[in-house]
Image (cartoon, rainbow, N blue to C red; front, top):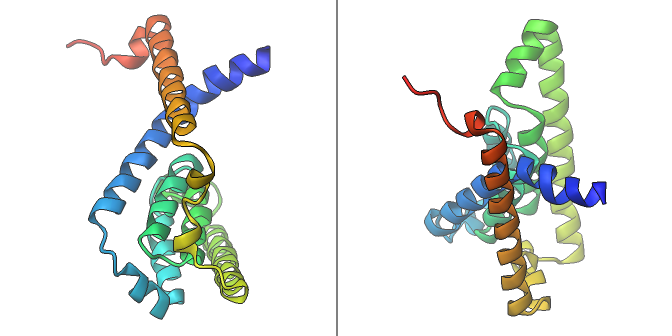
Length: 186
């Protein structure tokens, strides 16, 4: 019972904000990004990975919010390897982490840290693109297919339950910790 309370209480509260931000950004990407991203990404697979690496390293994006963002980019035509690079490098690094690593260790350690993250992310991204190509899978077609397996009523019910749980937990936390949710009056 304690595990259920944790999963649908504290854990859900911890991931709710980044998840909602990720869904919001994914919606913006889906609406505003051009549909011909496919042409550029397919012609420049490694360059698209480098672009996602450059976007992901300084940005503070947790795994919870980066997943819907990566899915939206794939739907717009980004190659899956570049999306994986973003999923790996984004949560592993950010400007604050970079500053801390440099201050606690030194510049050499920072260069090694970032080089290893970049190298591993690019290697895995290249492997994923090769695997998709080898298996003949079109990522844009595959992303979102789970929605076809689950009836619309079940999807709607799950979304309503998730929304209700998030709002309930926020309300409970607001009642228990009002100073956490309100800035002090001046």
